[in-house]
Length: 298
Image 1 (cartoon, rainbow, N blue to C red):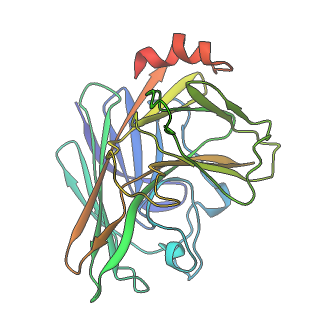
Image 2: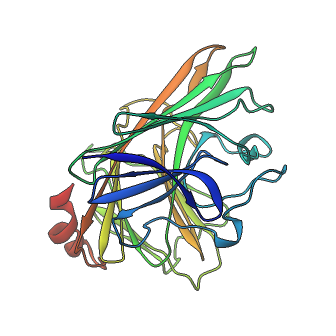
Image 3: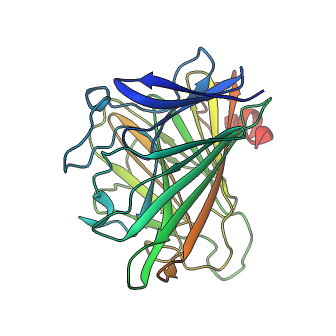
């Protein structure tokens, strides 16, 4: 059975816990939108929290806080960094919550979530909405970023279809990304990215993730994030990045994107993710580890 109750968390008075005895989530109500915690009941938080930012409210500076957030792509300043430091409208619904953020005054975009937890499993459904409340068309993509706790290993599948003489994959790279970075393993079927708390250099790539999933192993558990890529659609960041990932010393981000659209005034873009959490999964170091311990769960 799924229960929803109002709680305090990290110094914020108005947060909401969704739990079913197996896992629990915490959603902020004083700032955000943020899913600030997801984990097994009485277990560690699979998400990163920035301790010195917890409990903060107000101000005109953007804070990462940690957890899961909704942005719109392509990234840019000040566009992406609207300070979401103010109270939200939170409505308790069956098995979850609906959360609405005030309209971004700099972009005219309104963000909303519907988050529900299955009554008897770890499965979470997240429906993200971007609505254009402005007066002009806006080109954008929904961008759902989950900030994971340090110390884990991410698994990203690669497209396997044989396209003969034509390419079958694309890879977007950022100026600071080094292909010989020791944190990344470029496998035949999977890319493995290690989060290293001692590595202060940023690393990021984008990929055409046609499989529609990525996973992160940490704390002996496995977090799986799923979405539905659209074949042949135009995505941000050199047209093909339906999935992106970024890591630095304190966290790793798992990022899914919708196709780019021209969002007319009054129109809404929906982007859906599903999360799952599995116990007793060792950290993978090879593709064989992934094939034996992780892929059967997807």
